[in-house]
Image (cartoon, helix red, strand yellow):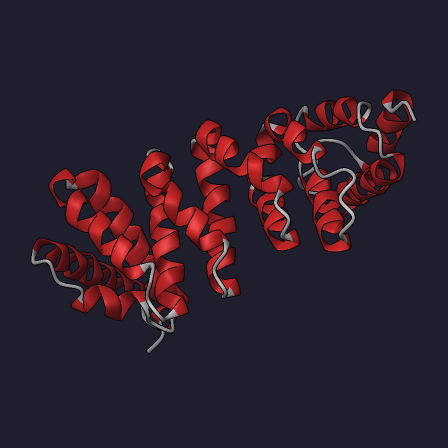
Length: 253
């Protein structure tokens, strides 16, 4: 039975069982339950398992050596679901201890399976929200990587930090303004739209775009920003017309 087919009390009991089983595995230098839950077909079972790892890292310091050994062993698993869950677990730790999990992100970024690479994107997002400086320092060199998918994934991964602190990621995004790969450019334009509709963000984004040299790309980004103010009108600080008026008054083509 799938996780959300259970009643809320049953789900709570299952979460407790998973937490206890993973803690027991780590205490006994076993991988039996961890392998079972990390490889479960149900996304929410895997999510519960990597959240359990994160909680144990912070609440049981004595288990940290075995916990890190476990993750280091499992990142080489043949099962993409297990590798994906390892990356997500590392992302929980990296919210405050990125130095301990940086190597997992680098490994995952080049994984052959999209599930694992997407887990890196998600982890960069959640870590960057809490612990931006080391994550952005790690991400920056990859924006010039020869592999277009690596550039795209990093661009996408730093988006969430930009939604509240666009000034932190705009200098990194500018590195991509002359990227010749459409898939990367499309992601760049998307991210610029996503970081421009919250309080104070449009002003920061437009001011920075005034320093960009690729005017064609900037126009694409401005069009996306205007469109986002309509698509997300329930969440945007400004109406679409107010955004248009602000851009017209403050963007210097």
